[in-house]
Image (tube, rainbow, N blue to C red; front, side):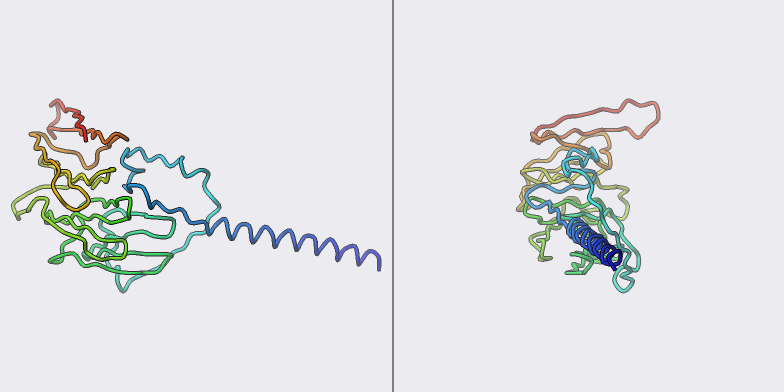
Length: 234
């Protein structure tokens, strides 16, 4: 009898430890990390360095696989934009911008004339979202899916062979660029701040520093020709 009571006590002790660890891991996995209050860009921010050390050690996480065949028949056409650990923007190949929050679709926005996102998205510190479509039209949506404004960065004709650089949000505006050498900066209201046109092609993405200086690799797209690196200030 004494041995049985002792075993029961040990079992209860193990049970309590297991319960504590389960609760600990549950809340650790459920921790939300939001990027609200900072500019959000793909490739690890405007520095494009794919560095995430500032978030600290990775937590033990659970992953999920969901199918949204009814709305995502063709998948994504550009990289997803994460606004937090649970909130992300999905640019579908059917021309819809879809906002997920904790695995649920919260809203969808249809781009004009069945157009699709033509480059990586970005967001400002208030988590307003910016999308550039394949016709050269730039959209700004609120985090709740409402259209703030839209305007043409560059009108594209059927004869144009142009690609767009991934959008970049910096502290005071949005940088938009195309492969024909055009780069433009807008403020968050969609007002033009400045534009430049180079006689060399701009790359798919480029970085900026904390002072807003932008570093542009320019290329001839020809083997044996010299390329250039240009730095322009904010």
